Image 1 (cartoon, helix red, strand yellow):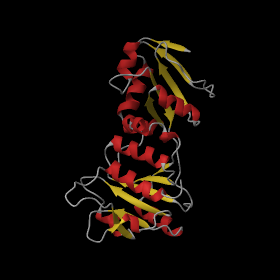
Image 2: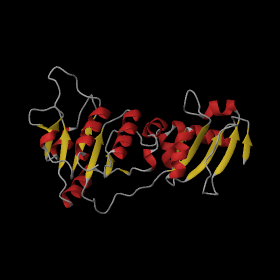
Image 3: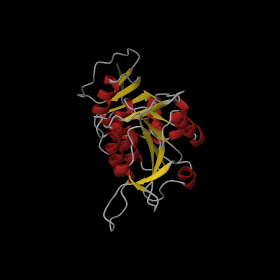
Image 4: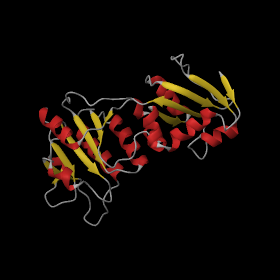
Length: 255
């Protein structure tokens, strides 16, 4: 175990760049997590933990990987490198999952996100997809970085369990067609059907941002549009809430 007391140590610079730069995260293949809860989840689900920074008195799980670098730092150093306003005594880096798009999609329940830019929303949706046993989550153009510390924190550990994939739109449509999976777009339109009337147990549903909705390009390749029924005078739902309601309906009867 190492001890570091200087915030100018090269390792601290590396941790800060992981917190602040998506380009650096993808360049190094690492992402940053914080909190003892996330560390426990990472260890439980077999994530490759590269480096753990912790303050005195913090309890760490027994790491199975002997290659994990354990570094005790001072409170001031932790405050300097943690992406949280109130650090919880631990920050650590993990290797990205490196998931490759599957050669074939298994029949099941898939959610697609397009243009959901808020990291907290993306993380919450991933957490909900895990809770409702979704077959997969696809991030399309314009979504927040999956490995943004705010996204990771909002997943509450689901990032280590739920597979998340990225595919170009044309390839995704082809993969869905190959398995006979219909694609529906959540939209506020006159042609959208009540989502309770559509079989969603083996389907994919696309959800867009609250402000812009789904792009015309994505809607054009959908097999249909669906809507969550609400009071006529109510506002549209937040993307995270809408996705959660849809995933609950998709999983109804299977959990």
